[in-house]
Length: 159
Image (tube, rainbow, N blue to C red; front, side, top):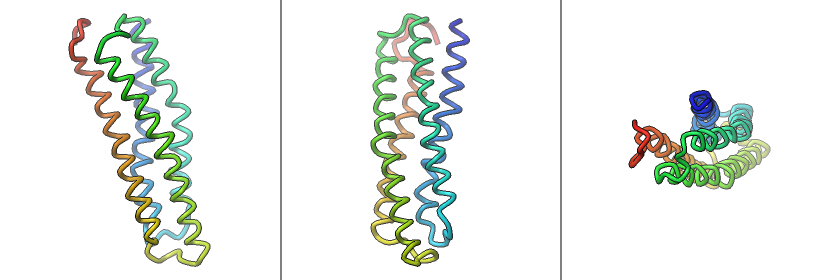
């Protein structure tokens, strides 16, 4: 049962967090591309992030179940991973998704004003830079969680 829970946990992490990381990373570049004639690619990337956020709830659910089965819920490496996962979820929910919505509305305003093929406005560039940085933090948090899950410093369960 433990192997099944761990397998589902790892698969959920790959299939849910991976698409969010990729879509969120691509979003700012596509949103501010000077030659962008339509909003469809960025709207799609935002929908990917939103949709996979819901699916991503399976990652901590199966992670807790696996940790409980292994009896490691109190281990420092797992507590740190949980804290970083909560932080990454907060970055996604409070930084990335709202930042994407803001950038979508800024680019929509530019397109409505007839600036479809022109350079993005200063506010758009600033929002895109901020969103790129926030997305980088999100991806870095997940990278640290993955390393902690593999290395498991101080673990007595063997690695």
